[in-house]
Amino acid sequence: MSNLERPATLSVCGGRGFVAAEPVRELLSPRQVKLGESTEVRRLLPNLGRRMVGAWAFVDHYGPDDIADEPGMQVPPHPHTGLQTVSWLHDGEVLHRDSLGSLQTVRPRELGLMTSGRAISHSEESPRPHPRLLHGAQLWVALPDQHRNVEPRFEHHSALPTVIAPGLTATVILGELDGSRSPGTTYSPLVGADLSLSAGAATALPLEPDFEYAVLAMSGEASADGVPLEPGSMLYLGCGRTELPLRARSDAGLMLLGGEPFEEEIVMWWNFVGRSHEEIARARSDWMSGTRFGEVHGYDGGRLPAPELPPVPLKPRGRVR
Image (cartoon, rainbow, N blue to C red):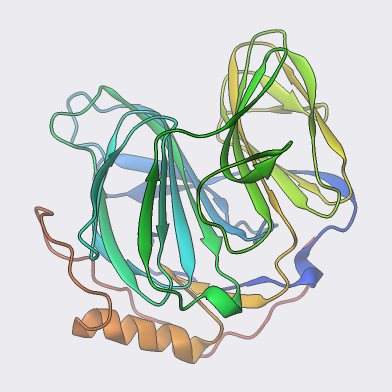
């Protein structure tokens, strides 16, 4: 999925100075962002108060939207560098095309994982015809320096491992949780899991104390570490935890995101993750000139033009707490 905001904002993310080294409870409110003609998303990362969670650098939550009489998701071909995209659905379908020639329909609880590496372009759209509801999350994982120029690839995994406890089914999307590991390729220690809670559930999920964590509320009425969560909100939890207490008043859906704090400072702009203003400017120029990112074939429409890049190089900001 693309960041369609215009103008796009340059952000410095990562680095230990942005990490809460102890357990905290920071409730993050989303920003409403228009995605194409008919889809509006709630953007949780990057957030004014929190830039990253481990290597997770971008989180959008959308739906549930009734798109029976709407085109649904329509994101034209656009570029990515230096990151992985994670497509995760609770309802609906998304058709993925990319410059490698991939053509894949991603359905609920299936992992669509695209590694941009040095360069890739892709489009995403609701197929025709499509299911009535569209509900899901789109996330980015920043690639560490030693892997950020790997060859691009796309993975689709329809079968993912689960962790079962009374009232809880946790599907491991990326990384490892309680001894169960996702088949998705990762380049840094992290975890992403979809948590399905039954009404009345009261349980605790094991965590890694060296990881920082956040919980994204997808649906229903649930609380994490005693904090009630509204759908579309995210609770940042910091580091130093060995377990996460969860309760549900109704059937509920959450996503657990975590990982070792990302050591490197990155520069994120539009759909690129880099290490300098000059690198971002070069990626933009390559996209606009039609080089490096390849072509997406089969999408009914043109490519997405890049917004204007601010002329002044970005300087690191102070510590975010």
